[in-house]
Length: 302
Image (cartoon, rainbow, N blue to C red; front, side, top):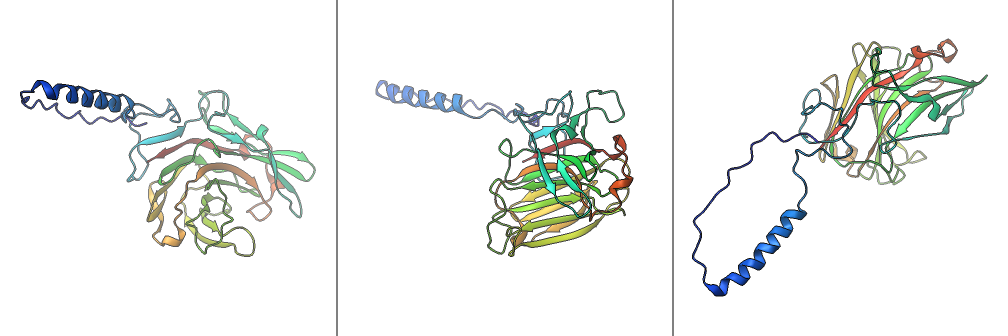
């Protein structure tokens, strides 16, 4: 949690009234109640919450600013293994394709054990070939371990190359998106980025009202200079009446339509995916670090 650097207010010392003996018992009882409330009060904001990575720099703020100031969750992906108190790594078939099938495998998700390397201290999601027409990437999610309602979430990440591959940073509600009411207020899939294009642009999409006959979608194409070279920040500032999306600190989408603004909690998801409808060809993808997706950090403020 962000340290609170504001000075403590001065202690006021008013003159004390003269107490008659019959009032002392009542005052003592009131004092005990006040002491009990003080001891049970939550810790001040300068004590870091357990979900905050101790490697996160103190006082760090979202790129481009935000109305949210208290860091409540972060992962800098240091160390030698995924922090399973925060994340689960999914093992499942993702989609059946006409030419190849894609999977998510925990073995494709790693935290770089060498902090001195070029991408040290980062999450790596790799591409592997399981069979002639089967490929695997990876996904992690904080379902059941961390979710939040309103706040600012920011990722710093390097997208994978366009060989039927794309990186995705997204949010999902614990209860799913199957409720049908004509809005995303009861829960939607919020794809902050899906890097499906070979150009310097990406999709920013909201799915709601399920994935069946009632499915609805709101999507824009975001211009993203330098998308396919190096690291960039992807940020969502989520308020009850507004959602502001930023790329490298620049506002790229500003939603005020109440139908598109979720009012229920959501958890973060990080994934690299293979799909035939993404740009390029998976048969051109090298099965080494060059096809990796890298994530430097994720941070959430409220």
